[in-house]
Amino acid sequence: MNPQQLNLDFFAKLLRQRTGLNISDNEQEKACHILENRLRELRFNSTESYYQFLNEGSVKAEQEWQTLVELLTILESFFLRDKGQIKILKEQILPDLIQRNRSSRRLKIWSAGCSTGEEPYSLALLIQKLIPDYHNWDILILGSDINTKALAKAESGLYSKWSLRDVEADVLSHFTPAEKGLFALDPAIKNRVNFRQLNLLQAPFPDYQINEIDLILCRNVFIYFTPQAITQVIEKFTHTLKAGGYLITGHGELYQQNLQGLKSHVFVESVVYQKHHDEIFEIIDIPEQPELPSLTLTETLQPSTLEATGTSSQATPVNTDLSPEEHYAKSIQSAENKILDLLDFDANYELAKSYANSGQYPIAEKHLQAAMNINSLNGKPYYLLSQVKELQNDREQAKELLQKVIYLTHDFIPAYLDLAVLHQQQGETQKAAKMRANALHLLKKRPADEYLEDCEAKVSDIIRHLS
Image 1 (cartoon, rainbow, N blue to C red):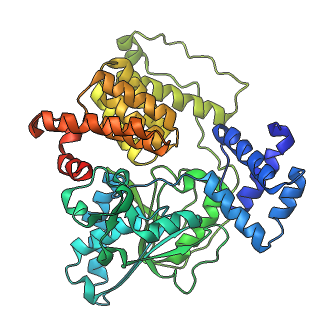
Image 2 (cartoon, rainbow, N blue to C red):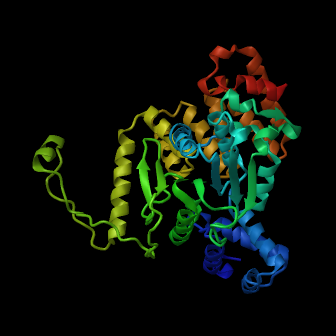
């Protein structure tokens, strides 16, 4: 069955209407594969009958929508994700909210699109540090997601070593080893977070629980949404926030969105949005294609600058077949390519880490590829790219990259451990055991102060994991 037979466009429209999720060009093959499997498993003879079933509104149809959401979304997060935004929360946003609410001793925080729970639990850990007498406060920390499978994992409070990567010892102290190599979150932290299944697009809020929120985090959720769905959800978020409350999204996710009722605070690490203290504002409709600012596409550098750079003063002809939007995109791409050419290995690598932490994987991959082109014998970009690929569920590519890391840097212990996890997930127990044995051999062979930087911070945790 080919994509035309599956009528993918109609399915994508249904998905957008129901969940706000958008099927991007590079996800169409995956969506077709999922549809083929669902038609086969449920014994539907045609896509039309399957789509009619999805529109029934029956209990079985609701269950099927939940299955589709689970198949189409990636369950991936980790504790204290995006160090820049965590810094803003810890040093700016939360202290401001705590100070403003000190008389009432009430605080309401919502992690919208919380996936498997690492984000709301991270907030609970931050709150404990910042409010010594938190037991005397009325604090709501809510995590919501459309995916019930993700919420089930969140409510268990059990996490793998992968979810605890790059966290400090004080955070690890809140976890104890559990079954199957997992780590259990301290019940004292776990019990402070409530979870709730919620469709951001369809569910009406503010409601009995979600109202007068001080802080909403909705990070790396809108990357899956259409612009129209983002507009609808942002409007509801704005009504749900308390006057002066904050909204934090993923980097660049609200680009070209109308943010009436919200003002922007630009930090070095990120942009934060705050609801105006004057709550009276008018919501207006947003056009499907926001009008771009007028661009002078034939504008050139001044002659003096051109002489200094050796560039011809003749303007580059404009391709009149391109729309203004296409010209804009082309100029942005050209600028990005020039920037990549100017950056050295370290700059590309650091930028890649920042983009990867914020979930902007395609941009991270560009910088990692640039770093590899500059120095193909350094294992660091290959290792980071393996993590990005695993976040995207491309385990085979992740394995190949980890093998490359081991070839380039044979004593880099995290690569062996990550490769062991991938082998274990695919049922290759002997290969997994071999990788762990190699890691243990290297661990015993070398003193801690000779480990590579990424390994050194995790030595104690590795010993506990392997013992």
